[in-house]
Image 1 (tube, rainbow, N blue to C red):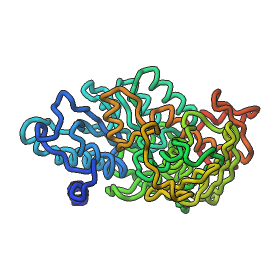
Image 2: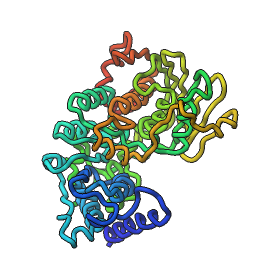
Image 3: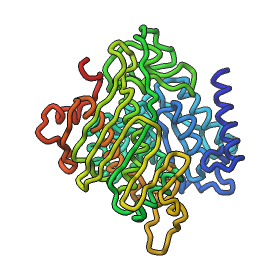
Image 4: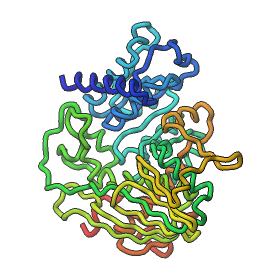
Length: 442
């Protein structure tokens, strides 16, 4: 009953957003109906991971795209796998009844999905510790990749992703909506067109909503969960509910997002949204800082959840820009010699306010504006780079990793963004390809 109600809520939500005119969140129509691309032109997509973000956001968007055909889902939780499969089959119900769609396949093992030669691209929405391994496997299997952020757990993983995408000619899109957010896009446009003069300071904030929790007891593994597959490349640990995700509940926040075996917390989670937009605005999205200083607060030593609770990091770039990144609220602010621009997910502000009245002239820079999913699918077809390809995603995520390492080590770090090495710091260099699994001194 819970599963059926969730599925019906999903489809009702998709219908409601369509009524409100929200693009990309609509129930799909049958093949051959008005507006739907012919079979030969559709991009066939497999979805790896069917948790909260995949089911409530990514799946809805793809179902509403006439040039996309969802053909397979994969999840190590059979309840979630079935939920996604049934939502797709119901979304394509008319096509199934007409014989134009055979139905969505479902897999526990993502390698079986990747082995299908009729899948063009994959959407990976698994826990963070699986992101880079699955994306690398997908590209090697000949698939284009849209990957949830943060795309990596280490700096070295990002370099490997970027190099492999370039080597194999795979289309890669970081699945972050910040380049499709109207206020962020407007702010970036103003800065990139030089309207605030020479940039000297950037401030980026993210919510300080991570918390600790008491030690957790070992529990029986739910029948529907293949826990061994879920752990994958992470250290082995006994199952407990707050380590993984809620049972038969697609909306609850998963516990793995607050445990360092699987995630680095807000510093990379929301940080890869807000730093993304700020690096785009300052045209620093393919490089990195040269100095990093940071400090943070971790939960008590006996806390089960153990990611950073609060942090503040200051970076310096080679061009002199000072970059402050901290827990506060979600926003970015770019300050220049002739004014400033501020943006969050809902609004853009500027000083002088007259900047907000600016409109493009014929010689001004125009930045592409489309949804993250549309950008990905369009580039799969055109073979042009996406708005956030692997190299950009690597540099954005690395900025967050560098801040995490500075707070973890508790000292100033000097970084060579070209060589991607720390200067005279063997301990820091040893962590370039090592996942941080525990808070410092534990």
